[in-house]
Image (cartoon, rainbow, N blue to C red; front, side, top):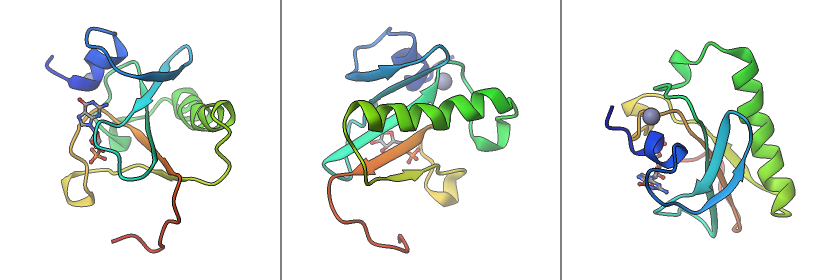
Length: 109
Ligand code: 5GP
Ligand code: ZN
């Protein structure tokens, strides 16, 4: 399967990994929307939140967000999951965005 995030998770292509747990990895976004922009993904290929049914993996993904922030001393951040094209999802391997390092407006555009 030709999935860029699978290749990052499998370390087939180099990326700036910032954190790894048993079933997740975190790495810097290639096109950061803020000074801190990290993506947390499952190692397993799952297209979107709509296809994620493993509650343990759900918990591990969100826990990984906390672990990344703890490791990098990030206290104020936004966590985003875009699900589906209309909601802005471009890569169809589920990922949790961690965005931080500047004031963030709410609601988003
Ligand atoms: P989405 O729009 O699907 O929620 O977010 C996809 C994110 O993946 C974007 O922020 C984009 O910059 C990032 N991205 C796309 N391709 C790559 C890549 O090859 N490497 C990394 N590190 N990030 C990527
Ligand atoms: Zn994938």
